Length: 274
Image 1 (cartoon, one colour):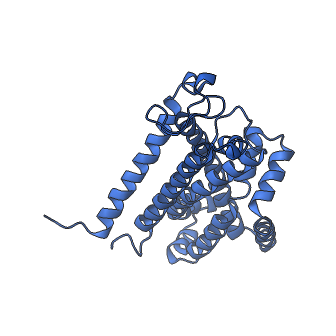
Image 2: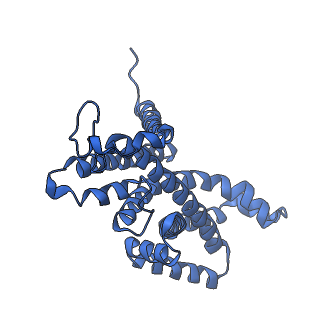
């Protein structure tokens, strides 16, 4: 039997992790609202075969509610990561191809955003925009683009110094043509990997801000809301209402982070052929 090399193992693990994340997301979307409705006859039940994560004080099944919450968190994470990645690419290209003043101004903004703790900045933006989904998305998206923007800026500066770009300029190609045919194809891997790397951070920040009450509304079955509600009943012995959803969130974030590492390994030219 042929032994698989590192690249083949990485591809298989990447497919497996992506399938697991897609399955969690699909399960959360397919669960009807009636399945997570309250029932005082089943209130505060510990984990069992009927309710693997137990039930909360209102009799809602925590396992099904956690799955729906994960799908909400993943939706917010994907949307915020996508917006951040697009902002990072546009800002990075503008800094590398614009004037020195524009480059200095963008670097100053990046230093300013990175100098403020993400949680505080997300809460301030979310509060200023009236909380809810819009404020949370804007807050997460506005705080996660800086590192990728600096990476894109450095990559564009290197690409502009390449000989084939200089040849294109001498042949009379416009800046837009060079951007489409030389810069953007080289930036696609960084964009994709940066998007996946930001995804777990966005999920954690969404859960944290919702837990503190500055994110999604209380009626939304998000993980942060579930954990926030469970804090009221920990002293009564309902440990499962916080521990099991919290561990599920940590497992999801670790899976997403592992997927990002594998994708980076596959795309990186120094490790792709190992």
